[in-house]
Image (tube, rainbow over all chains, first blue to last red):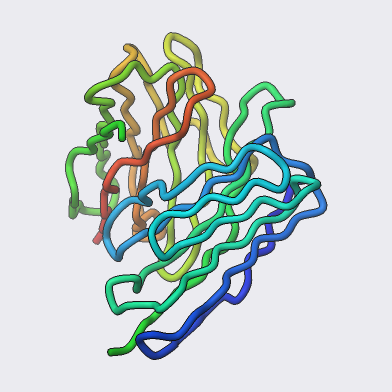
Length: 113
Length: 114
């Protein structure tokens, strides 16, 4: 069974601080997605990383895919209250018949002004 | 990005009744649709995967006779919760994907069973 361990589970920081969320697995994924979810809404796709070692930037968010495609990180620089939400990583493996996503448990981020 | 809609956004029903939730891909053809359930403060749990025109594949522990899934067209999938009970109260989220493209999520449906 493929598992994605996401950490930390909760994070409460002040505006302007930096933070990193980690997503680790013993399995190799074809790609990995990061989502952000607001309360009462569905997850919104932030980025997809596909190549081992890949780094993608989305304004103050930096996403990295591990060389072995088993882990990923999300780094937020100078966090703002608008970054508050649940961040989910999800790995895709298309070796099986379904190719469904495996979700981490999420990181609930709270950025205080 | 691609848009996925869900209807209704919330529903309250009496125990024993059935509830149907619709999931539509608005600007792409969803060859595969997924149904998830999310309990408060938890991550998404995949319930079933459906390919257009085929029977859904259910995850272990999900009763296929209780959660009926129909994916009759490339833009519509429905989830029917039959004989709903309070323990079925949850946030149900669908997602859709065209081929092996990115998966896009609907806004979710909050089901409350009294």
